[in-house]
Length: 219
Image (cartoon, rainbow, N blue to C red; front, side):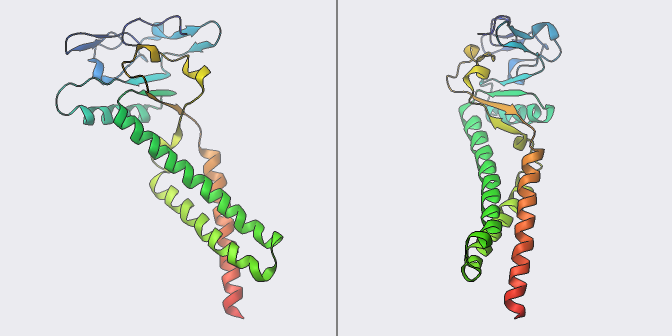
């Protein structure tokens, strides 16, 4: 497990009676774990290598007043925009909502790719008479999913993150300091190639569908 961490409440966040002082930044702990200003608080594991202090942000589940949920959402927004490598979400509700949102985005991406591929390959595997019954619906589905992803997910900072399940990578994070036993851990990943992939396939499927519809109605 991680060998160098300020021991209490992760990244030097010290909790008291109702108040929590973050020794990394001087902010109360509900501002999250802000270790980017203290490079001396970086984690180091001889077996796994170093984890920079700027790589991890923890949204702590600390309820201070009635607007705690809004505060959690604000912290998560700030962490996403700051482009941390890892974001640990301790509050269960916002963690589950974020994981579901990412899952839906992944589903749209995969559906756009698979249905678009089916549209483009069906003329090669089916007879000309029957291929249009597969190609046109599959192409329309691919275009619809790619368009929906582009409208709702493409510019959302959440789309650049995936839920981390790798136990080896999770062991580098200070999860043992959290009060929640099931935090959601997000890892930042480049989504440029996947967006190019489903957009290219969807556009090719759209072009094929337009061509096929023109041929059907032009005759």
